[in-house]
View (cartoon, rainbow, N blue to C red):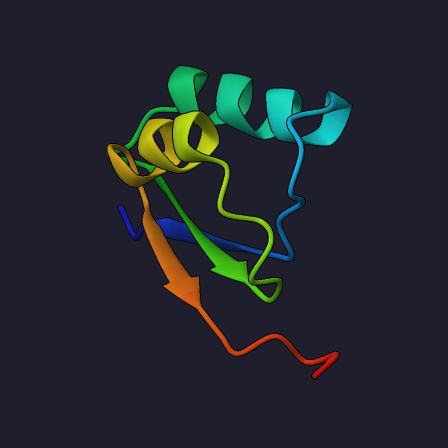
Length: 68
């Protein structure tokens, strides 16, 4: 079966409801079927716990902060 790839764009600098939902989803999905990757567009979105939690299970691509 072909893998479904999901790309989540934009991470926040704080761990709120969306971030918690993304981590819970990432923890529960079957990684043989679904692959999640993330794009960070904010330099301030580098929360250590959130990044370590996601980067252990998915790729995070960091882009330059578009607001500069």
